[in-house]
Image 1 (cartoon, rainbow, N blue to C red):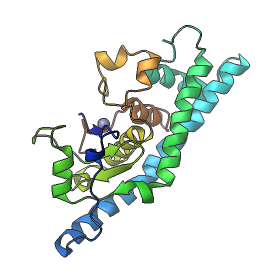
Image 2 (image 1 turned 30 degrees about the vertical axis):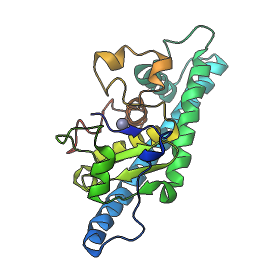
Image 3 (image 1 turned 180 degrees about the horizontal axis):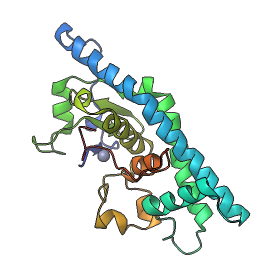
Image 4 (image 1 turned 30 degrees about the horizontal axis):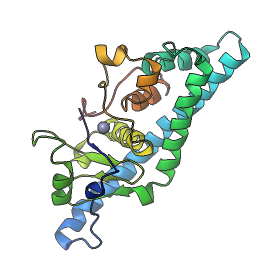
Length: 229
Ligand SMILES: [Zn+2]
């Protein structure tokens, strides 16, 4: 499922966030805000686990010792999702992990500032801003403008709790860097054949990795391919 990431260099694409909302819209916007607020703790938990497990993996590599139980899980997940075992020459696996860690730290910071980043646009604005990215057959629960804002649409509250948390991480990954795009899907041959340099810019790697390093450590890929979960 591709979600739009606008090129924030184009001023036309800045979403219009209505300053005052007609009364009929207010309830719908409150519903969306509540659905996002409900999903934030799980997203925050997954993100924190992602950052923590990357630090563990980096430290064991730097120390050059045998990985313990959690460190093994962290290294395996870094290789599954971010392909830290397929690097450019001259980049150590520890260096590769630092690049992912920095992005997780930015994602975590962005989530902590979400009150000023998250927007709850009306349906018409959402339709206008996403037209051209998607046909009408797609559900677009949220979309991001890098380093600007993340808009949640009326489709967001209908998603399952894990899907919502994964969508929040997905959008935060778009938010922190315009180069992080929907490039190789969330699973399958294209996903598996990425190298580290390209996986860093595949938006799906971020929620997938974070979930994989959260107890009980399943490689369970939540998101718009599983909207009910
Ligand atoms: Zn996307």
